[in-house]
Image (cartoon, rainbow, N blue to C red):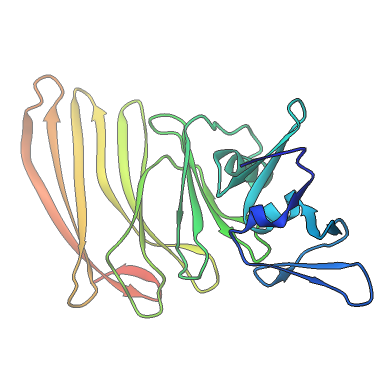
Length: 270
């Protein structure tokens, strides 16, 4: 939505949220509330029987973002989260004192802690094994706070079909690392604990491929939850093969491990 001159706006065009306007009996002051929260009313006036209010205050109170074009004298109101907004959060709050690679930035709103407001998961693809991963949590004043950052190349994230009493949803974050002669994919099972800390409950290898002296070694893994008792079952197969003809050398080896959930962590069962 674009508004000419961009300074003040009539309330009827911003009717997406509940807006209440009240006037004091003994003065011309105007009380302005959005979803029950009072806004600053210094610039809110009544002109010819109409309530005029600052467009930026109203838009931002409803989760919008306002930009002003000096040349065209147009104010652009963008509702919802935009890529530019996320980039700005990272520049101001990011842990790394360097320039982030924003060209391949993507994000998604997901509820990771079970409250009313979704968090924002962000990933930056900086190359085959390079990247960054962030989680931003919405605060009571409408701003977003960085609560987790890692220099991870994240390939995917999804909610696991696993529930434990008193535990927030469990997410599977798949990362990729490596170098010239290695390629590693790992699964990080993570959740938001009661203290608001993004916590790793388990980590396992999905693929680990390395090359040495004309051969390559590969380990492939996967996991599954046992719905009957909440155990995590992980299995992995390892093998060696020739780089020249890709033929397997020797026998493959498969192992299995069982993990129990203890105090928010999956611990290997002995």
